[in-house]
Amino acid sequence: MEERGSPDGDLARSLEKGPEGPETPIQVVLRVRPMSAAELRRGQQSVLHCSGTRTLQVSPPGGGPEVAFRFGAVLDAARTQEDVFRACGVRRLGELALRGFSCTVFTFGQTGSGKTYTLTGPPPQGEGVPVPPSLAGIMQRTFAWLLDRVQHLGAPVTLRASYLEIYNEQVRDLLSLGSPRPLPVRWNKTRGFYVEQLRVVEFGSLEALMELLQTGLSRRRSSAHTLNQASSRSHALLTLYISRQTAQQMPSVDPGEAPVGGKLCFVDLAGSEKVAATGSRGELMLEANSINRSLSLHLPAADPQRKPQLLPTPGSSCAVHDLYNHEGSSGPLSLQSPVAKQPQRLETEMLQLQEENRHLQFQLDQMDCKASGLSGARVAWAQRNLYGMLQEFMLENERLRKEKSQLQNSRDLARNEQHILAQQVHALERRLLSAYYRHQRGPGLTPPCPCLMAPAPPCHALPPLYSCPCCHICPLCRVPLAHWACLPREHHLPQVLDPEASGGKPPSARPPPWAPPCSPGSAKCPRERSHSDWTQTRVLAEMLTEEEVVPSAPPLPVRPPKTSPGLRGGAGVPKLAQRLEALRDQIGSSLRRGRSQPPCSEGSRSPGQVLPPR
Ligand SMILES: Nc1ncnc2c1ncn2[C@@H]1O[C@H](COP(=O)(O)OP(=O)(O)OP(=O)(O)O)[C@@H](O)[C@H]1O
Image (cartoon, rainbow, N blue to C red; front, side, top):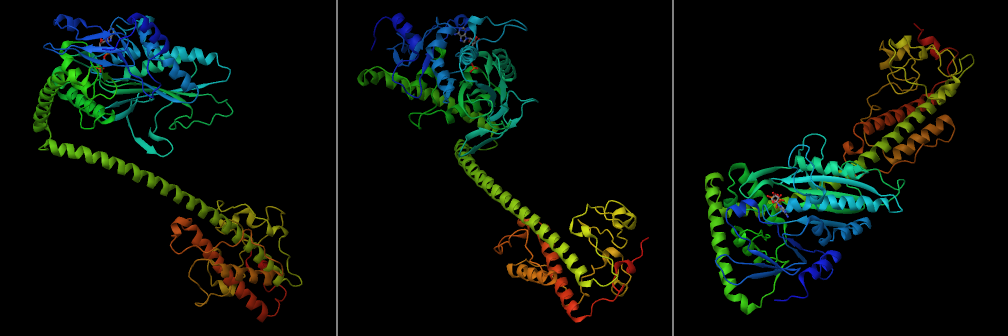
């Protein structure tokens, strides 16, 4: 057995330095709690003996040599909460978190072994009865140290906290504004696993943080069973997010988004339990099963064939549990030589097998009653497959998220395209209007309103159609426009009632003055606008206006045939294409008519002579 120096000397050194041993990513500190009053009443004796500062010896029930285990540090039942805080090296983790690292402190062990006590201290003994400061746990001590440390730092630090529990394999927000409801766990490449919509609360003082802790603790699920009167039935994770940016650099925090920076996470795992020993039934047993399952699924094992590894409690009733669980442990090391271990190993293995046998038998009994005919093998198969399915769902979700973002990009592009097209149509209409008047102008004709080129505000909300003031007076230059009707369109367009062509149709249904008479050949179905269409339209417009027509945006490339119109802006784009098409036809027709007909005689085409104002 390897021992060095006096235990007390070693302990003093250990407390100052934190856990011993080489700098590894994980340091294990073992704490032995005092025997409880109930255990002493039952006449149990402690089977755990701390030897030095790093070695724990366990006496097997029924005698035999002790089994020794080694940890980064071992603290006996006499050690105080402050001793534990110092021995665990949490201040070192705090310093690392302040430098941007992510660090975790977690307690792990059998039910009733003192995990919650070590992390958060004992619960208050009654309403309004404060817990003595000397019993404050690792978390409160770390909070006080951190707030003090932050105050003495030169740079501003932003502190936030989240607090959740995993209860019956569901994540619940312990700081949620309403009553906690299950939250989804998601995964992506940048963030890894994260809880969606988890509330992250900024705090500025120790009091505020303590209040958050109390809120979470009071909402956490706990129940009484034989081994613990206040047994936590969930895993609880409190995370401190530490950010050292200045206020200007701080990105705005999305409530669902965890802030970037260092992290210090405290995890109080629910205790593993032998259901038979805790006397759990009904809901309590369901909780116990899900706790045991989650511990065995999520904690690393040296040998995957092995059962979950649990830490010891001092009572002799738990010794088999302790020994059995430590055999497969990857952390603590046995110090005995392989030869000396042989008979002891065999005995331990036999005890393990007996225990496992009882456990499996019990589980089978439960399943027989409850699991609607599912055999143990099928349950195991289902669990394995559920895990596989979960992974597949995550990948599928990630793929769908990417696809959604691509579709959103396509939709934005289509909207831009639609906007550009609308502008082009509008510009073209104005130019056509201007060209029409220039073409039709004759002696005595009323010149067109000089502000025709400017867009007028929409006025369709003013019924009835002809009482709209802007139908009679131009809103910009106040010129009377007696023959301009306000169409149900985005902008004002001249509407001339040609008695020959109108055929008694209402003004809004009649074609504009430059439109050719409708012939079956000229009425074209809406179709995709192409580059050559666009060029043709522009050339025609230039012939009419004798000016260069500069489109407000370059012609858009032809879309690949696979892209559906829905993705390219819905119904808007085809409608605009249709309008462009109609304009193109109208230009062509006007051009033909302009060439074949003599200039209009005085008054023959004046809008004023067509529709008298009402
Ligand atoms: N070091 C200690 N000194 C005094 N009392 C302790 C100590 N550790 C634990 N206890 C007491 O033992 C009981 C069980 O402790 P605790 O609830 O912390 O166990 P636990 O491991 O969190 O259990 P569970 O997994 O069931 O939640 C409590 O009454 C607690 O006050």
